[in-house]
Length: 377
Image (cartoon, rainbow, N blue to C red; front, side):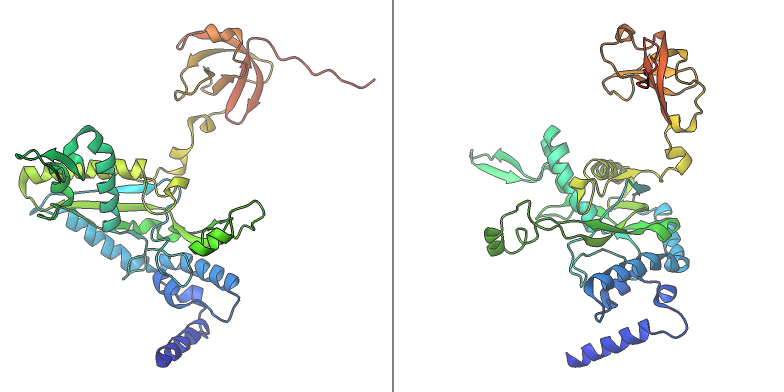
């Protein structure tokens, strides 16, 4: 044990004290950095923050080698002829935290590819998510998608079994499932920004600690919040499934399972902190900035306050309220729900006054805006 510690300290010292290049310039494996190169002689807070920053920048230097491996994997899926395969790219809507509770010297874990140190989603995590979603959502409509089906045998006794469709996809004690959930790899284009420093702020650390401490320290408003830095993930991932049943029958099963997984990733999310909006993935590549920008932000306002304009009433994303569309394409809203224009039906035109403008919205009224009275004498 002493020899291992001495070796580790020596390697760490040489790595950090490189004479030619700094650690930031040399590192290309984020996983190795996070596991082995925490500077113990610094204060814990500063050392952790510095290491997270270095690790977040290291992935981009793995791009040349990783790009070759990624393209080979993608080509293998595309050329699969023996067994049906389904694959597509998904983009993270916000952030994702995978392996946050894993063992780590930093107290917050992160699942990375062992060879390349790049972001990945384990196939086991994808399978677990799909299995749970299948049982809890699809199983409500069809019991054959349930994990446990209760029924009476020929003797009238109750027995349990997995649903037929569930067992075919995920397996049972008698037979392995026929769908393979592969690790999802991040696309090479997103390596530069894949790892982002994030922060969570537990307010009641002692209450969430050991059971004996939680009894002695109930959560109160007097507890001090303690910010905890960790790495979260952004970008696109290649998600792939294969079926070990050849032919059209296998193709139907792999397509069905891919649809199941697609819905689970979008509606439930994967990884940690999904209740806070983390881990949602949507099918397809991430939209470009100009495509993601709402329509109204790309338009130029042509009307000013005090102008009477012709507008058409619209149903704006199912939201409650009085919404209209102006001739220049801008979104309009009437803030007063008792305004006479409430009788205008969706699709009908009317004329209203512009009483206020903002970068992406006209505020309208059936009455012209009134000038504020001056209080000066």
